[in-house]
Image (cartoon, rainbow, N blue to C red; front, side):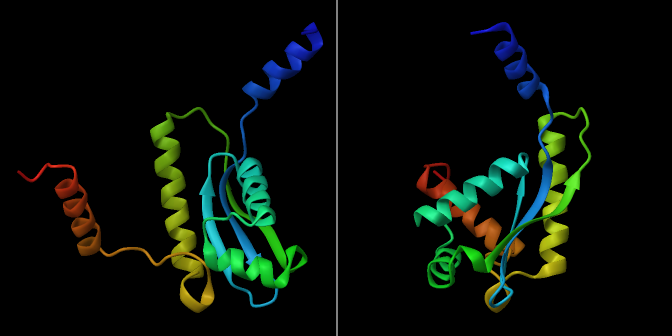
Length: 139
């Protein structure tokens, strides 16, 4: 590898990625899919690629994409965290808190969006108990 290629590669690795919250908005019915990412550019590209390939994990979003076409969707950054030196856990917690704020504000559930509604405390506890039971922790 040439020295200039090596330097470019090193620079790319050291450059902080834009981190934050994004949405995929259906321009036909205004439904949105909201998510967080430690690499906004990469996530937006991945979601666009999955939708184009017909393999997006969100079936309702994929169905609308198939029905309306790519030109009826906008990929938008809603919020970005300022780049800073932080432990990965801090970044993860900050992103989760920011995502919660946007989900509460936009309410992209049911007829308004493609996200699953947040689980209640009781539902989360039941899910943990089921997972433990299937892993043999409740003996």
